[in-house]
Length: 327
Image 1 (spheres, rainbow, N blue to C red):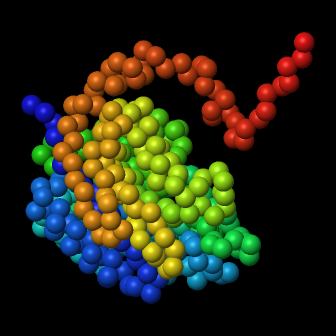
Image 2: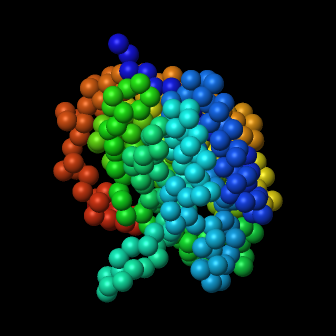
C-alpha cells in the first residue's frame, strides 16, 4: 500500500509593518480551514510568517527589534494556530523570529535571537525545531543600499544543525521530516545533511525579494525565481525527497517579494506552484515510497559516496585559487 501524505504550501501575501500578529494568524487559520477542506494533512507556512520581513528595517539599538520576536511557542498570539491544527487534524510548519533565554557561559541567562522554524503535529506537540544556518545580508547599516538586509544583525547562526525527525503524520505511522529556511536552500550541503538522514520531506519557508539590488548583472530580475526553483528542484532530486517551498509574496512595506511557492517530487519535478501574489494554497499527494528509487540506485549513498574525496568541503570556508600551471 502506498505511503501517501497530502501536503500543502500556504503562501502568504504581504504582511505590512503596522499590522499586528493577529492579522497574520487570522489569515493562516483561514488557510488551514481551506486546507482541511482539501484533505491536507501537513501545511507549510513561510519564513517569519507572523510579521513583516523586519530585517529590512534598521534598529540602532538591537533591543528595539525585540518586538518582532516570540519568546514562547505557542504564545497567546499563536494559540489559534495550534487550536486550529487540533480542530482540523492538520500538522503544520511555522517560521518565526525566536527569542531564546538560555544559560550564559559565565552563569545566569542571556538573550539569543534566531530565525527559527518548528514542526507541529495535529495534537499541538512540537516535533522538531530548526534554526537558520546560512544567514545572508550584513550586520551594520549601509547607507549606500536602497534596501537593508540585516539578518546578520538580528539573528545568530543556527546551532541545531539540520535535524530530521521520524514521527507520525497524517495517516502514516512514520515520516522522515526535516527543515531549512530561505537561503539554506541555495547551499547543497543543507540538502545533503538531510539526505544522509533519509529525509523524505523537506519543508522550507522563504521571504525573497524580486530584485537583488546588490548583485546587478549576476542575478537579473528574470533569474530570481529560476534560481530559487533550481535550488529546490536540485536538492529534492539529488537527495530523493519531496520538498515544500512556501513563500511570502506581494508588495510588503513597499518592497516586492516574488512568491512562486512550489511543491517538488523526488525526481525534481514541480508538481504544484502558486500563481498569485496573495494568500494561496497549493496541494499535492506525496507518495513517499517514490523516495526509494533514487536512494537505492543513482543516489545510493552507501554504495557511491566517497567522503574521503570531500574533505575540502568541511575543512575550508572561503574559496582558494589553484596554483598556476607551469611547464
